[in-house]
Length: 249
Image (cartoon, rainbow, N blue to C red; front, top):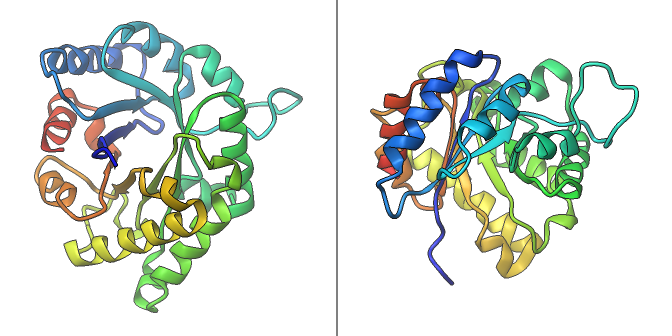
């Protein structure tokens, strides 16, 4: 099997207006001379997807969305469909980020439905899983993450490109990160489930780590077995910080 190409995805969350596209352009320009970079993607707010896709056309940086509705169209005020993201130039979409699970009550079933929607529109889903601090302290991490993986990844993913992002909820935006051993334990467990669900194809999907990834800890995290990239939050907003993470892969 060919060596897996790392995926470094930046989640801008609810940050960024048109002027922030300068950071994306700078990143693309700086990576242009690198003949073998990892896959790099930026997931801006919906309002910037089309503008960013245009600004980065022809570059090595892909564009993704942060969420999508399960339906292709309809009376869903404030929502965006996977088809609309694809039409705007997105190639990937984040599914069931922990902030969506916590603030909007997104379940594994909803995550699976949104993943199907992404596939329907030709988008590559990045499906997020992860435990809370209470679940970690109770020793339930592998049970929680295992349930989320099995429940959030539909069988329709077989033969399709996708990624799983492990993001311990207690490490997102807190500056805290699990130990290398803790990260490895969870990523190995996820890999075993992917192999169980999808056979040999389950060995090819990158498992990203997300949770306070920054230029200082990126190299150590990205060396952990079964870590196939990173889902980066705040550090993806500035070209210099995100480029440093990309180059650590």
